[in-house]
Image (cartoon, rainbow, N blue to C red):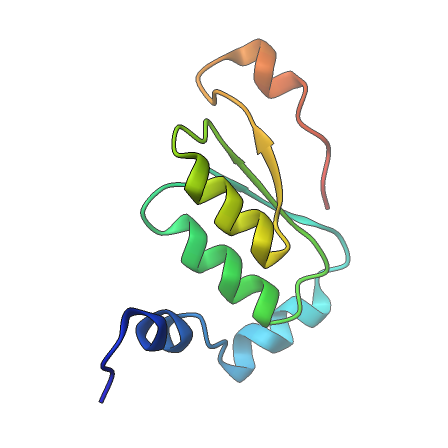
Length: 95
């Protein structure tokens, strides 16, 4: 039985063999837009645990704690307002 939030996150971000196999086939980086949203941090952690070479997380990061958490996981974070077309043009190519 899951008793703590940490146990829940660990279970939610445990990659299945299929996800790990899929990550092994991806040659480039993975960019997650809106990474600081509801599902973003868990998805980023799942991908890293599955062997993603680099996860780039893009968000406005209005909550500095969320960005710090993602940085601590090894996510390369980029601050960007996704509704700003000019800002989108500055994002790196991945893949």
